[in-house]
Image (cartoon, rainbow, N blue to C red; front, side):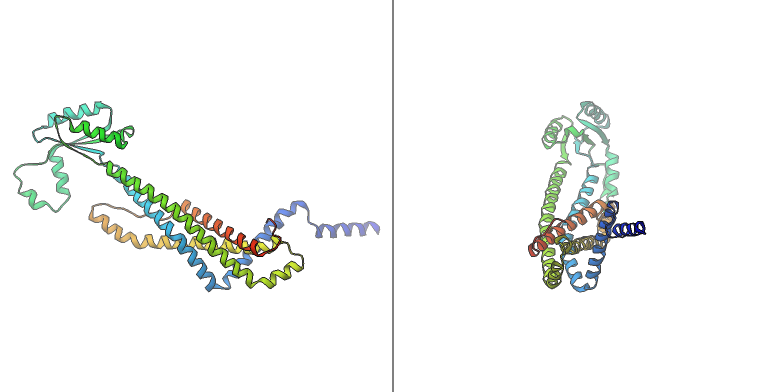
Length: 327
């Protein structure tokens, strides 16, 4: 009989004090319950929640849209890099044989990865493909276009200083008429894009601080509205971590929903701009599909939004709760 009572007491003790192996599951269940409960509370107040999420989404959509714009421009510039780095226009009295000998010398120079010769007929055909000059071309008695050498320097020769030196060397050739460098402006354009990318990072950081303030102020108002409830929980012995946890999850949900709102706004903008961009590219006999936010960019936005929101929530809760302990 005594043994039966001892076994019952041990069983009751195991029920009241879970085993150590059960603690991770209980911790996970507790956090899952708080996450679901806070999301339900937000859904019960759709208008205030929607307004806060919209403000966060618009704040994050601006740097995200600028990032998408710079990435698309960088992709476009990558296509331009396929064009010749330098075009050497030969004198009118240079024939095809002399042009071929010059091309062979430049190939043996070592400074150029590729040298393409464009004879007069090829140049005229390319000019004719541009369109709009059919009547003028039909009046020509002979081909007035010069022979052109399209030159592609090695990557080691692509610095601005080296390209200027190559330009000086090319223009000094006796067969040369003039030289057009096609990469200097592209390098300047790349530098502008690098500057714009830095500006996007700076703007994203500033607007991230704005998200922190928005969420922090929203959580502060939520704490004031639930002040009596918090005081009751403190009276019955609730820890600061227990009281803080729902507010942190509320901030995390604001960050997640705001990040998704930013992704949605940028995606809609890309879809709306795709048709006019395609029409513009068609006028230049080209195609350019716009790209939106990829998975990595979306994860970055969500991580940044949630992080700033959690920091804002943490500051607001710690300011209004006494004796806050670490979560």
